[in-house]
Image 1 (cartoon, rainbow, N blue to C red):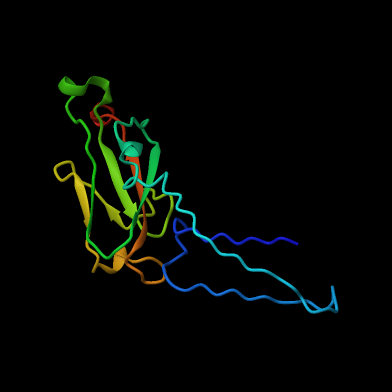
Image 2: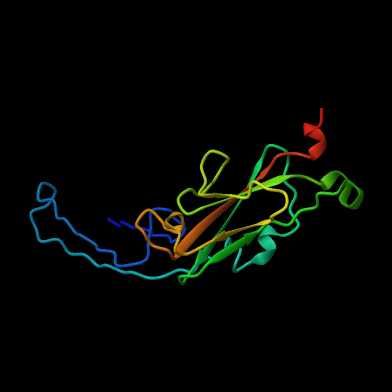
Length: 163
């Protein structure tokens, strides 16, 4: 048979480092010595990485009470600044003004209002800085480098919350 295992750096459970392969020959199916070939290769699919392809997250509209998701990979230990730019003035941007929420995490591909590590939660500061020494910036296995997941939640326009 042909068995394949894919390890993606976009998987929240993966971390940089060594991976080990074990082969087991079940003698109930065959009594001969097993013959096998192992092939390993890398495939850089960064087409959805907002560092590699900045246009993925530019000039997007998100419906009220909905999410948009992004991801990026940090290959070396560094502080990360995630910035949210949006128009909050009806006179400037008409019906597209809004109060989006920025959510960042290392452990959930689709962060939401109940599952995140960092949350913007203010209208005056428009960025989140993830310090590489912060324990929340590490993945499940304690690594600082690797994938980050971003969620943007559309709260709706400010008018929808005015009594």
